[in-house]
Amino acid sequence: MTRSRMLFAIVLATFLFTFLLPPDVSTPQTGTPAVTEANLVRTWGTMREKTYDFPNGDRYWAKRLEAGANDQPYTFSLFLPGRTGTFRYVRYVDDDPQKPVWNVINLEETAPLPNAPGFLETTDRHVWIGAPIVYKPLGRGTIEAKQEHVLPIAVHKQWGGFALEIRMPVQAGLVSEVWALESSHPLVPWDREQFASVWLALDLQRKAKWLYDGYYYQSPSTYVPTSPAAYWRIPENYVLRSLLFTGQSRVAEDMAYVMLDASVQNQEAEGYWKTLPRSEWLWQDYGIPDGYYDTRFNTGAAELMLKGCQQYREERFCQSVKKYAAFFRDYAARHHFVVDGVNVGWLVADYAHPGGNKKTHVSLNHQLAEINFLLNLYLQEGNPTDRELAEIMLNGVVNLGAKWVAPNGDLHYARFPDGSFGRTDYPYLTYNDLRETQRLYRAVYGRDEPVLDQLIRSKRAWMNANGVVNPFPE
Image (cartoon, rainbow, N blue to C red; front, side):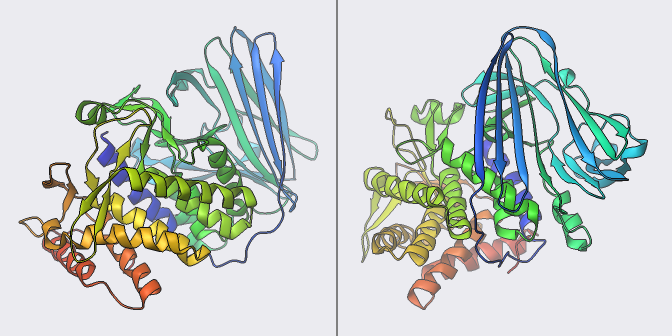
């Protein structure tokens, strides 16, 4: 999988989860969970445990075993009170990732649970549990799943409920993990039909994993290290995006906080989030090694943190946004191309490494996403510096005007350091970025920007002529 295909797949999956429900308009969440973390030294290695105790009584926990020697599996029990119970999980018909369906099984009739994330629901307890995972750390923020080492969760019917026997392998050089969110109340309102479709589109099983230290996505073939079973820790969490922007469930309120907290911990002191693997094409074209800055992934992560700041009023989330905004202002000032016009404009380079590299191309979708973040931040915080930077970056787009339009009416993907344009654009990603820029421009200035309108109309005409259906509402 190349990076462009990965981003397209991510965008589509994000749509499927986010737009099947109307946007969340709930009031800001109140109360901060009590977070505890322990690193326990064992004869075979280290066991890490983390818990979040929420004011609403819910609890999230995660366990991670880092084995330096072989030993018997680490075993513990999770008791679910209740007379009856079910496990709801996603099954793929004919093992086809395009054919997900819900499968609900009775706990009374189940010995081991299927190895999949899912919802355990009894008359008295509700749990979202991740599939146990065993993996080999490959370095550079990348892991390789070792499915053959996973031990299934056993279910034992007992007086007053069900006991889950969870066994985590202890094998030298491998890491075992499992996590769960527990509540005495329903986590998802399944009686609302839309939620079944919404959660069916959430993937923490095949293309993505939620691990102890963050969100991992299937590694592209152009990354180093990589393998068919490799996942890398990506700055932008697409499940988190869905939880924040759709909300409307207890699980969304709880898990969005947990995921935002992990993102804060992964933020560099300078204010950005590194892409830890090496991209072969960025290395070959621009001399960028591993541990680089990707503007699109970072802008996405910062946008989620901005939403989290607004929703939770959590100072750590708000400070994270401010750190990134300060970093980006400095980055844009040092890594841009000047575009002359009535008003001078900047095009900000897509990628950079703190150790230095050749200045990279500027993708239209990256530039627009950055403008959109700055305008959103200005509308929320009112700092004129953010609006001014958005203006000069927008000038960089509009000063080039029709040069963005390819001979076939589509838009060029990027402008390169030599001033040329090229590469095939995404089917609808940039179109929706343009529409969002126009919406925000209208909110700030009270009118439409005419060059943006020209680019939107050209892209829309190309989409119509080529049968491209925009899954996002217009």
